[in-house]
Image 1 (cartoon, rainbow, N blue to C red):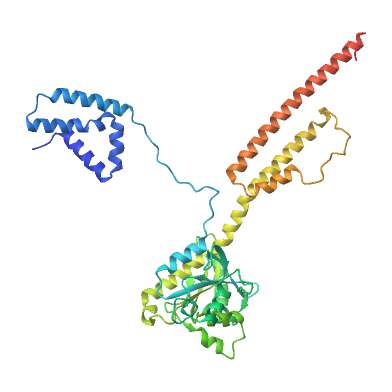
Image 2: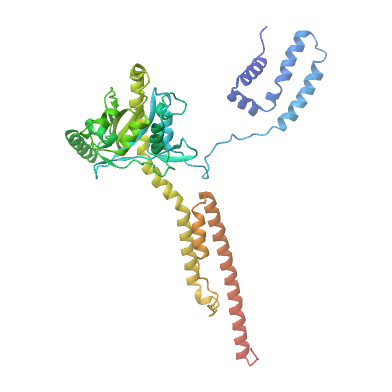
Length: 429
C-alpha cells in the first residue's frame, strides 16, 4: 500500500534516528511537535488498516496534546567540546612517536636517537622519557621495547652478567648508571655507525652546503622554494654485529659499547636522517635470535626507514616546544611584574598627598616580601588562575587607592575649614 508523504517522512525519520543519523534528528527538533507526533501518524495508519476508525479522533487528539507538552519541555543541549586544561601534563612527542612507530616492527629491542652538532662535530644523545623498567617515569638514552633474552629472568638464556649490564644502561636510579656521553665520529657504536653513513662524508657535506647556499639564493630571489626534502639512507638496511665491533682492534675502547654487547644488544643498524631542525642518526637494536628472513622483509625494512624519519621529525620539535613552554610558564610572572610597576608608579605619584610614614623602623621585615613569595608560588600556577589572581589584585588596588583618595580629600577639607575658622577669628585647634 502506498503511504502518504507525511507517513513516508515519519517512517524515514524514525529509521534514520535508529541508525544514528543526527542530521534528520536535528531537523525534526527544529520542526517542533512534528517530531513527537510521529507515533500519532503511525497509529493513524495502524488504526486505518485494522478497521478501528471509531477511536481515531480521540486517540489522535490525546497524543497530539501529549506531544505538545513534550515538545514544550524539550531543551537544546549544546555539544560539549573537549579542551585540554593547562593543569594536564604536556604530551611527550618523542616518546609517543617512538612507541607508535615501533609497535608493529618485527624483532626490535630498542631505539637510540643521536643528534649531530655541526659546531663541535660530535654526536649528542637525545634523552627519551618513558615508563622505565623499574617503576615510574625516567629519562634515559634508550627507548626499550623488550628486554634482551640474556637479561630476561624468564628466558633460558638468562645471564647475571648480562642483567647487570642491562641495568647499568636502563636503570637511571643506579649509582653506577652509565649515561650516554657525546661521541666523535668513529668512536663508540653511534660514532662507528655514523662514520659509515654517506652523510658524514666530506664530499656529501660539501654538496649539502652548496645546495643550501643555492636554496638561500633562490629564496632571496623571491621564489617559493618550500621545505627541503627529507634525506635518508637507501632502501636497504645494513645490520652490524656489535660483538665484532667490540673485538675490532682499530675501534677505541668504550665502556658503553662493552655494556651493550654484554646486555644482549648485539645487532644494530643506524639510519641517518637529515631534515630541517635535525641531523643525526637513529639506531635500531634488533633481536639476534629472531628470524632473519622476517627481519629483512621489504615491508619491515620500509617501516624502519619511515619510522626513522618520523622520529627525527619529533626530535626536531623538542627545542621549539621547550621554548614555547618556558614562555608560557613565565607569562604569569611577567604579568605580576608589570602589575607591581603600575602600583609603584601610582604610589609614587600620589606620595605628596599621602600621610607621612611613621619613622619607627624597629618592626621592619628583613625576610622575603609578599611579592617575592607570590612570584615563587606563581611558578606552579596555571595561566587561567594567574590571570584571575592578577585581576583580583588590580581590582583590590584600585579600591584601596580610591578609598585613600577620599580620605585625603576629607582630611584636606577639614584642614582648610580649620584654617578658615582661624582666619575669621575663631578658635581652630
